[in-house]
Image 1 (spheres, rainbow, N blue to C red):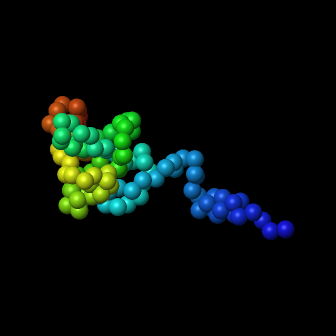
Image 2: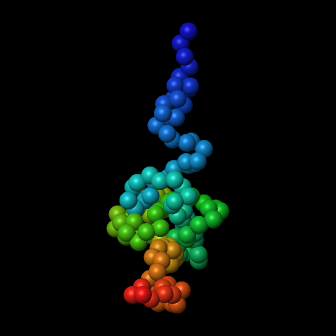
Image 3: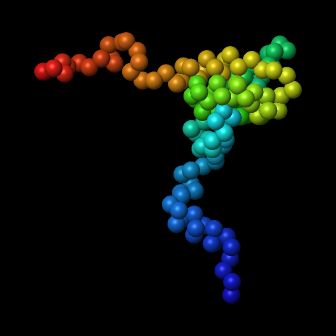
Length: 128
């Protein structure tokens, strides 16, 4: 009797040490075109506000409409903007204003320790 094909696929994935339950859905970044787990990417949608299309970040993944995904990295945002990928990913006929999305990515991608507040400075003297 021939073994079932489905069991062979599962066995091969276990040999590659891929845990299908922990990986979850994967999406493609519209900027760098790399695939990543959906929880590592920022979802955004296009919303019409008074005849003006705007790209809105959707970190909670709850806004209605067609969404696209992007790494929360200014380099990926710049690459997507240069390639004009936002309109294609969202199937838009007009141009969308990416200002809100750019602002959200800038605030999210600020590296830790780059501020001049007291919490980021060491409390002890490293020379001692």
